[in-house]
Structure formats: structure tokens, C-alpha cells
Image (cartoon, rainbow, N blue to C red; front, side, top):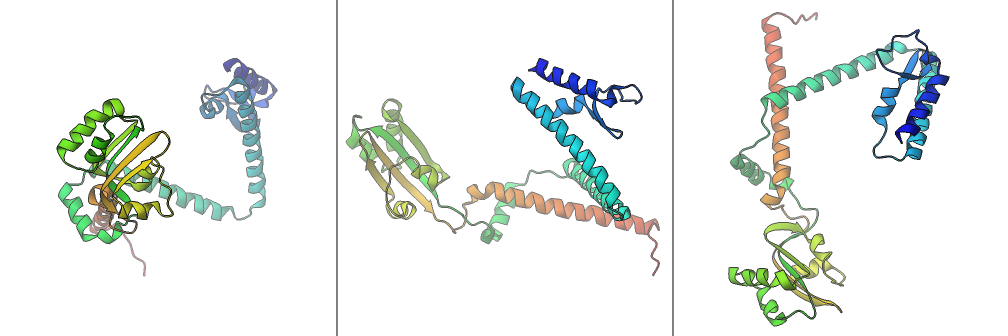
Amino acid sequence: MKNYLASLLLTVCLLSVSCTKQYNHGGKIPLVEVNGNFLYREDLQGVLPMPISADDSVLFAEHYIRSWVENILLNEKAKNNIPDSKEIDRLVDNYRKSLVTHSYQQQLIDQKLSKNIPEDELIEYYNANKELFKLDRPLVKGLFIKVPVTAPQLNDVRKWYKSQSQDAVDKLEKYRIQNAVKYEYFYDRWVPITAILDMIPLKVDSAEAYINKNRQVELKDSAYYYFLNVSEYRGKGEEKPYEYAHKDITDMLVNLKQVDFIKQVKDDLYRQAIKKNKIKYNY
């Protein structure tokens, strides 16, 4: 692949006017020149996706070079046909200022502001703003086990899966090692109901409503038994459980703190400028 690419780059370079020594290229190897604009080998190598086959690398390089040349030509044509360059310069200057300001703000935030929010503050914010945290899909807690139809002790499994007692769970844990094809314990966490429905052959008009009404489900097909016990159900549009909303709450509070922090930085700069008589009002 490297030989193919090197051959292509060398061919382009030999055909290019930019390979002469009339320009200072800073140690880079020029491939193409368009009216004093240069595309360097290092630039092309930097955008070459990896891994890539030899043939694909050649096609990619050809396409990239052609696109680069066309963009340069279009840009120069545009320069000659856009009379109000001052407006362009103003927009570019404003954009540059915005980029510099944003980079500095991010640097300050990274240096001065912690993203670790105390748990009690997260809980307080959640309790005061529960209307902000609504589910877009149902969640469930529970247990699921899938076993072959030939598995032993099926009557025991029917009793164990319906119970949340530690004894029943322990027995299922031991049983599933040798007999279960699939086993999911999620009494201790919320999971999207779609993840559970994907594991069972439930064929009803509204699977979510069925699970909400029938918390203990036993299904069978030609090869397996499916046992599902739903201990808790939280429907679409209801409040997100705190533990499930934890990341959203954290992100919201971090963002609010960042906004307040930058506002305080701006206020401090303004007061300092006033104090040092740096601001002159002419009205």
C-alpha cells in the first residue's frame, strides 16, 4: 500500500510546478501548486484513512488532490467576484474573536471549575425540577431467565423466578450456571423495556402495556422457556428515576455552573476595567 501511495505522490510531485526550489516549503514536500497555494505530501498523509487497501489509497489520494485543486480554484474565482471584501473581513474577524474567546473560556472552565457535583446537590436539583426529567420510553426492574425446554427442575424455576427473596435468587444463580441460555438480573437497576422485549417471543398488540399489566411472564417456543419477573415499571412520560437521570442531572448542573462562572468572569473584568478607567463612553 505504501509503495502504491508513494508512487502516486511521486508522480504528482514530478508533474507539479511546486517541486521546484523557488519556494521555501519549510521542509515539507510539495505535491501540487495552484497559483502559489501548495498541497504537501504531509497534508495528504495526515488525512489518509487507516486501514486502507493499496487500490483504495490511490483512489482516495486522487480524489483528495482533485477536490483540493477545485476548492482553491473556486475560492480564487469567488474572490474576484465578491466586491464587498470588507464585509467578509469583518465576518472573519468576528468569527476569529469568537473562537479565541471560546477557547479561553473553555481553558478557564477546565482549570477553575470542577465537574464533580456533590450528590446532595444533585438530589436537591432533581427533587426541585422533576418536570424536566420525563421518560421517552418505559423502564423496568426485574429478572429474566431463558432455558431449554429439556432443562431439569422447570417447576422449581417457575417458583424461583417469581420471588425476589435472596434464597430464590441464589438458587437461580446456581441453576443458571449449567442450565440457562440467558440470564439477566436487574432488580437493582432500571433498564429500557425494549431491551427485555428483544429477548422474549411476546406477540401481542401492545407488549409494553402487557408487561405493565402482567408482571410475571412465562413463554415457550419449540426450543426454550422464557421467564420474566418485573418488580418495578416506569411508563413513558413518567418521571425518570433519580439513578437513571443521574447523568442528565449532572450535565445540567455542570452547564449551569459554567454559565454562572463565565458570567462572573465577565463581571469581574468589567469592574476591573471601570476601576482602571479603561472604558470610555462617548455619549
